[in-house]
Amino acid sequence: MYPLFLLTVLLNLAVLCSADFHVSAVVSGSVQYCSNDGACQDNYNNYVVACPSNYWNCNCFTDLDRGVLAAGDIQDTVGLSFFQLDAGLCGMSALNFYQQGDGSWQFYVDGGDGTLQGTCYSNSASDYCWNVLGSASVADRLVCYSYICN
Image (cartoon, rainbow, N blue to C red):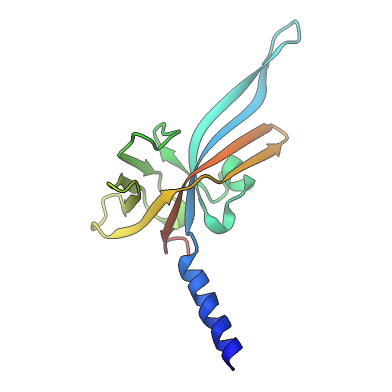
């Protein structure tokens, strides 16, 4: 009886503690330009994407399958006090992020009623993706805890 009860409690805590989505910086490159002498130059694309935690993968990073871009050019959150994610993450409207004094980020629905939607913290996970068009290096910037993608 006790092992089953303990397992149930642990599973419920794991769900409560799991991250909801990640905000990651992506640098993707593909060979786009080759001169007549055969020398090719890589063309790099820099952007920030948010992906649900249960879909933090190359499809989200490079194909934006379930992912949304951050509005503007925010490769690094250091030194910023505000940024916005485009509408579409898990069906949400645009989200506004505000840095707090402790370095965390709280976020709200743009034009919403002011209800706190969740909090994000610095993260340093990374990934590397390959596809037929090139490659992408992914550096996770924030891990966000909320219930919007559940």
